[in-house]
Image (cartoon, rainbow, N blue to C red; front, side, top):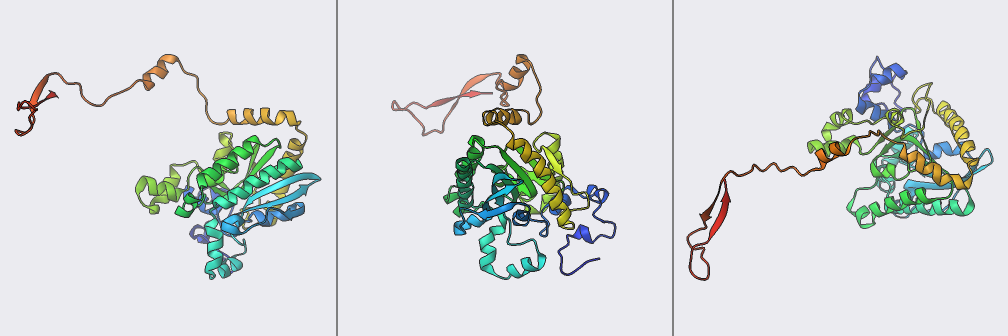
Length: 345
């Protein structure tokens, strides 16, 4: 039954959809993508209650810094640095509707797209974690990094590169959790970690379906077709080794069963944090390198086969004859003679 206090996608209103795994599997790829960014799914700040002694650090709202939140915290006595993408002010639909009436709030949250300043905050938090010997935990929830001209002027690509480098070079173990949707470089920036977990109904994409549609079909309105051609769910990321574990949403999607989702999140987090906390410092880089080497599909081939597809191929037909043709009648050299150009035919 539809409740006006909640948000519903069109597929949720269908009488045959009951939030069961079977119903979710029957959704189109784009509908699965929509499910992953349902506005009522728990966001980073909703999961903060799981941790002990949560304390905001490097706090700032300047230039969109609030789109990545940073907190010192502990979990079962393990010291952590939390770096979380906060895609909006709330996961409460009534509060979301109220905030949408305020242009300043809409501008502040920038449709969930992290800005250069927010990635600078993430870099600073990573350095602070090194100093204070804290495990770094990142949280993914974004449609992508800010693509505006202002973001380009602020060096958005440079800032994303900085946080990728920071996570790769930190001496502390790192863990990333894909909460909802993680799209494009904005998400990749925070997933270069030693362990990557994902909520069962989350998505993880190299580019959003809308952006892919704009590139392929020159319109955003073919996003559903673009999604069908992409591996977009975190379940598919698990198949190729990008995701280490899916966090079960057994009771149903997290926006319908937030308490159960948080408990499953806490259980998975405890298991992995204990492992990372027991890892000797001298093993951190070795394990990090080995993890990333194993991602994807690898095939062995021969040098002859490599040569067959690396050799230059020209699609210009080879000429059978050669000759010369005159340029236009007024084209002459200093001696007054007509100039001829070589011609292949």
